Length: 101
Image 1 (cartoon, rainbow, N blue to C red):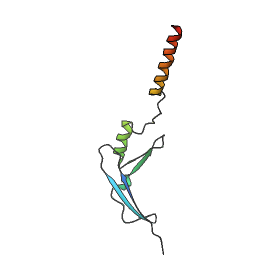
Image 2: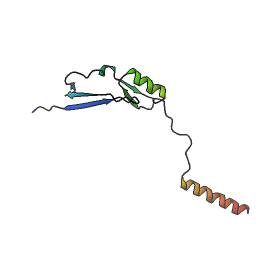
Image 3: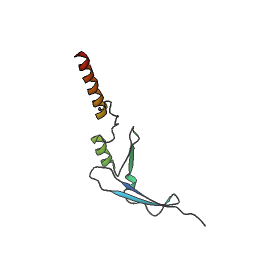
Image 4: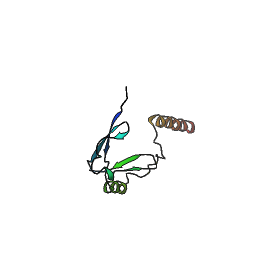
């Protein structure tokens, strides 16, 4: 008995306002049928964070790049205090006031 693996992949353009998508079917890693029109323009962008974006055309890719969508996002350098941190700080200030008192 032979094992045949069927796979369907759908590529959705991540361009703002674009609703194009392409669906490809594979049988044992080989494409089945003709590729959909326009798939030859498909492009993938990967930024420094390792995030990947897919676009149906250079126009959609360019708009996304100009909007800053691909920019490297650094983690925040300042961490906001939690409620517990604020409580501990208040207790320390109250103790200091009491000692100086």
